[in-house]
Image (cartoon, rainbow, N blue to C red):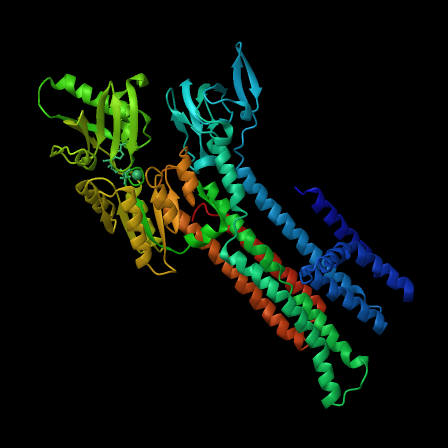
Amino acid sequence: MMNRKQCKMLTRILIAVIMTACLQFIDVGGWIRLSLYLMVYIIIGGDILLKAWKGIVNGRVFDENFLMAVATVGAFALAIYEKSGDYLEAIAVMLFYQIGEFFQSYAVGRSRRSIAALMDIRPDYANIEEDGIIVKIDPDDVEVGQVIVIQPGEKIPLDGIVISGESSLNMSALTGESLPREVGRGDEVISGSINLTGLLKVRTTKKFEDSTVSKILELVEDSASRKSKSENFIAKFARVYTPAVCYGALALAVLPPLFLMLFKGAPFDFSTFETWIYRALVFLVISCPCALVVSIPLSFFAGIGGASREGILVKGANILETLSKVKTVVFDKTGTLTKGVFEVNAFHDKEDKDLQERKARLLEYAALAESASSHPIGKSLQRAYGRDIDRTRITDLQEISGEGIMSVIDGQTVAVGNGKLMRRLMIEPCHCHIAGTIVHIAVNNVYAGHIVLGDEVKLSSEEAVADLYHSGVTMTVMLTGDRKDVAEQTARKLGIGEVYSQLLPADKVLRIEKILETSADSAKVAFVGDGINDAPVLSRADIGMAMGAIGSDAAIEAADVVLMDDDPRKIGKAIRISRKCLRIVWENIIMALGIKGICLILGIFGIVNMWLAIFADVGVMILAVLNAIRAMYVRKI
Ligand code: ADP
Ligand code: MG
């Protein structure tokens, strides 16, 4: 598929080719010949001349258009002066340059489109039910809390909670995971997923603009505009390089002939200049930097697109570049390496009386206190409680990150959290002999008992850590607010190098800063967290990666890389994708500069003529663009 601009461009190229071919059979000379060729030249190169002229007027003289305009006008002028009638060269240069431009615009358009297609998650409408009839409305007009209907085959337009129906969802566009996910009443669903089998009614929890799908699209659209250091390097390079080339060409046209005339007895007229002017024009054509100017942003764009197809959102080219240098990966434990889905393993009451009833009270208090928490512990306690929560009983509530919750329930102060929270309240927590995460509960400043929670390590965590060492990472660290024994057990099981436990969120920041200090400048540090309690660490690390981030706005905001599913194996994959992309960028830089360098030298000695020069230029560009597109293919990496 081509757009209108590309169609026009192709038409002009074809007309020019046909006309040029016809001219080869028409044997006319003099002014007629010149004006026929000039006509073709204007058809094929008119816009370049115009752009070059506009550049000069706007003070941005030295760009590719200028190089091409000077080279071809020069070639034309030389041919007129020499009365050779050989205008073909100038036309060929323009023609091939335009073919290269066309190809590039086509390739860029294609990769943009295929990224857009894979990001084709924007829903066009939402269904609402009015008097038993389904009405399609703009997702923007759906209110929070409104019920929407999703039929099989439709995209879920807004984030929400299923209130009736059962179905399986295809979330591959969001997470790269092709296995469908089963959902039923009470489950959260995410916009952008495709409803495969059943009719779902969903109560929306977010407006369209805050829904996952809008966040993702925003993120991918923005990422293209954040430039990497390599890109900046090329922009700066082109600013210096192009003028340098132009002055170089001028010197080549003037100095050698002057030298020959003054010291070697060459004739004092224009004929001495002729060869050197021609060589200078060739020099201009060869040195056009478009291969780099085009291929480097394209490589990053393709890399970011390929990664997002795998459920890895990278927020910009600069981040992809830093990612490729990651040597240390620091993990948060809960929700990152572990499932963050806690099971209640035991209740321990202060006194052992009326056990059943007191257990129920402990859990009820815990669940009420946690009713507003998005922490995995809080969510698990709410789930374990299982009943609807009467929020009118809660009159005050405060979450202390890394410690727990302070609340007022039924007029009594209820504290739910770890040993730190208890000690802050001057309560000595009861020691527990069972291994696990302990949630202590105190009512009116009197210790009431604790609940022992167990969390499972994600099935893929161990493989993920091993995989990191294969992707060039040399150190892994775990930071957690959890107890020492649980932390060390998990780290040992997964093969993580260092563990720091019982950290408050602020301690995690200090720890990350220590790690940043001790690692070399070129060895970057990534922090992987779930976005709960660790947003400051996410933004402090060189690279912040948020796990399980679907729906968690804080994480999407704070992180540089968002892993759409909770799979920690994506960390290694993200690093490998970035390395591939950077390798391609450098391949292109070296190839382009290498070939151009050789051609320039040959050009100075008159070995390369204009035909070869334009072939080299366009050829290098096409190779570079094709190579850049490779960055998009990362499935099997
Ligand atoms: P991690 O570093 O493992 O992700 P956090 O920093 O989120 O852990 O929390 C550290 C500890 O603080 C938890 O292990 C838990 O003991 C306690 N905690 C934090 N939030 C809560 C909460 N909402 N309810 C109970 N305990 C909590
Ligand atoms: Mg956490």
